[in-house]
Structure formats: structure tokens, C-alpha cells
Length: 467
View (spheres, rainbow, N blue to C red):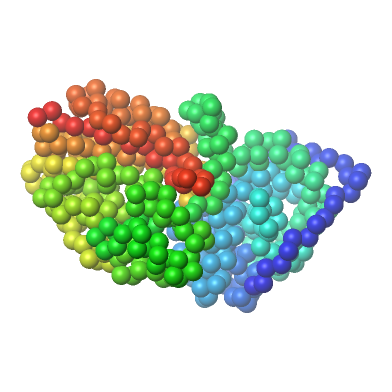
């Protein structure tokens, strides 16, 4: 699908400012028919729009976006190009869902059916691309969205409404956006509880935190120190015509994201994909040759592999999800490394052989609020009460793992949350409960993007057990 420049449209000089209806609440509606095959051409924008809308509708019922997209792809005959377009549209939609839903509330005569709302949200996300040129001409988006609506039984009856809403947006863009952006949901594209939590946790930085979370993430690689050096690999990238910047001891950020099959040396284990902030874990753990190491909650294995790239250690990778643990094994195989893989719950001890570990990496479950730019659906899937529930689970995991640590050993507590209840407050309470000695570590990293650094929002606390 060819990309065309965005049309420059002016709103009517005397257009009346639209009013937000008093109630635009979602009512219970039948689940969308996500298995229906539309018959649209796989190389059309309409095909990609309805596929992305099906995934977005599933997110709104509690399915994470990668799983929702995988289900859509499994049922259809999407080409790699169509899959890429669906993924791009769906992720754009997640990042702008608050604004899109507010606009729909301003324009739609009544709250649309789930798949209709998702289709409109996908279209509006393409027509309001922030700080960048929209990938498609706006009238093309309208035409193809109406075509997509006509091709699916859950949306066909709303074809006229879809057409009217999108054409109204083109006519009244300025006034509609001005009105919508008065609402925090539309301005920030997060649920209100999330905005309030960010303000409370980071009163000086909350706006930057939310803004960074709405940006597309970079593709960051981790150099495998056993197989290449930073200088050598940067030269390899330059030879391949790929611009890149070093942003950490082992971290390289590509100027333009590409598929892993196009990354030089990826299949040979020269590099792995891993956020620069996540790459701090293995060096902080200070693993020495011959040590016995546990990586709890290890999947997908980035930190496990990094540990083995830095030391000849005996590593056990533990995860409760057998399918995700398979990914750890695949990463180890690609890098030519070995570890013991155990499928078990980190808050239990039944799997443990009783031999203490010299080092434990505890990357515990959390709300994942610090990696929302990579997983923009998280903000719409989480609920306010999840923070307490996950913090309680994580405290049990930490206390259980502490019993497995050898005297004089170190435990690194990691979480990708921005909320103190899951990070600093958790670390402080853990130290008191277990009389753990707290060592130097970065603490809370707020998500950042820029020339010198580019990383997600992670938290690190390092503890040592009294000998």
C-alpha cells in the first residue's frame, strides 16, 4: 500500500463547537464475530483496518494485543505485509485510544457496537498521527474504512454512520479536537486512574512520563560480548548501511527499526533485542565464573542470556509458563548457551533442590507500567486494584527466593513498574522483613528517550544476605 501525503484541510470558519454527550458509557453488547472472513483483498487497507479493529475489540474484552493479533492472523490468510499493516494500525490505535474514543463520543449519535467503535478508533488514529506524517491520505482512510465496515456482519449496518462520523471529522477537525482535548482521557491517552497515579508518584515528572509512554519505542540491541565487540558490531552495521548509536556498555539503538531477520548477525548470536534499561540487570548482579545463579520469572530469557554472556555460571531459568519458557530455550540455542530450565511458580519451593544460590535475579510480576510504550495496550487492560494485588504476590515471591540465597549472596529485585507500591516501597519493606543489606543500585528509572539515553521505566534494588 502506497503512502500518500496528508491532506491539509481547514475547518469551516463558523463551525459550532461540538458538545460531549453527558453519557457515553459502554453497555453490555454481544462479543464481536472475530472469526468471520470478510473476503476483502489482503493487500487492501480495508483488510488491514478490519483485522486491526478485530484485535482492538478483543483488547477491550481483556485480551492483550499481541495475543489478539495472533488470533486474527491465525484465522485469516494475511500476507506478511498485511500483518505488518494490521500491527502498525492496532498499536497506533492503542496509543491514541483515549482521544479516539472521546472523538467518537462527540460525533456518534449513540455508543457504537464494539467492533464498530474499534474500527472507528483505528481510522481516527490514522487521521490524527501525532508529530508525524500520516501513513495514508485521509480520504483514502475514510473510503477504506467504509469498505471494511460493509464487509463484516458486525459493522455492515453501521456503514452509513461510519461514513458520516469520519467525514464530519474531516470537516470539523479543529473544533472537534479542541473540544476533545479538554478531556484528560483524550489529552493524555490513559485512563484517569493512571494519570492520577503518575501525578502522585512523580509530581515533577508525570507529564514527561506519560508523554514518553505514548511514543513508539526504539529497536535496541544487546551486543554479545562473547562473540563481538561494540566497535566491531558498529562497523558491521555501518557496512550494512544501518545507522546506529551506542547508548550503553552493550546497548546499540538502531535509527530505524527492522525485522530481526534483517539485523546483521542476529541469527548467529552476535546480538539480541533488549531494552537498554533491562541490560543493566546482568552487570548489577555481579556474577562470577562458577557461581550458581537463579533467574526467577525468566521468560523470555533476555537477562538469562546476558548473565551467561558475562560469566561461566551454572544458571537455572525458572518460569511458571511452560510456553514462555520455551522461548528462553530458543534464545539460549541461538546464542549457543546452556541453562537449566524449570517450569515452576517462583512463590513455591517445591521445585528447589535445597542447594543455595550465589546470585538470584527476581524480575517479579507487576503492572508493567514502565514498559507501556512497547505495550500500549497495558494501560487499557490494567485496573487500579491490580497494583496492590501484584505487589502482594511479588512480596511473597521475594520472601520465598530469599530463603534460597546463600549467606553472602546477592539478590537483585527488578520490576518494570512506575508505581512506588511495586518498587521502592516494596524494596524498603522487603529489607526490613528480611534484615537484608541494601547495596548500591539505580533505583527507579523513569522512561526516557533522547540522544544520550533511551530506555523503559525499570526499578532496581540490590540486596546482600548477611554471612
